[in-house]
Length: 135
Image 1 (spheres, rainbow, N blue to C red):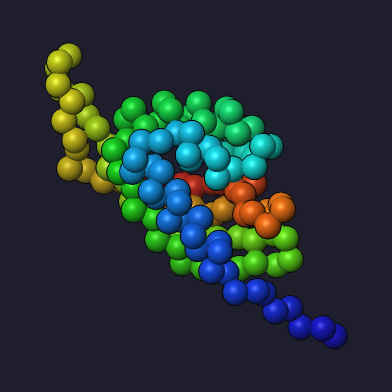
Image 2: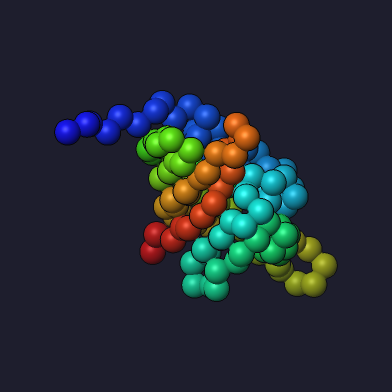
């Protein structure tokens, strides 16, 4: 019986770095570019979001209320042209006070996530992205 040996996951760990950088820059287009054309985003307590353009639109709305994220991968593995990553993240939100000023909230949100990725033409793209919040 042949034993399963995953490949080193260095390139996959860079996905978290790119996600965090684009998110903290408020760049919905850069975020969406990390997803495949037919990717599926599965945010908590919401309907699934399918397709890169729809995912970009989702991020455009989300970035209006969120200000920062810190992503910490726990485990990543590559198996052929597919891979996964699991980890945790924390984010901070904006809270609106009155109609003329926006203040950053001191309350953070902690969550865990799982990404399923696919390699195409030597480039890793997120195929499925799901997360849920710690309560």
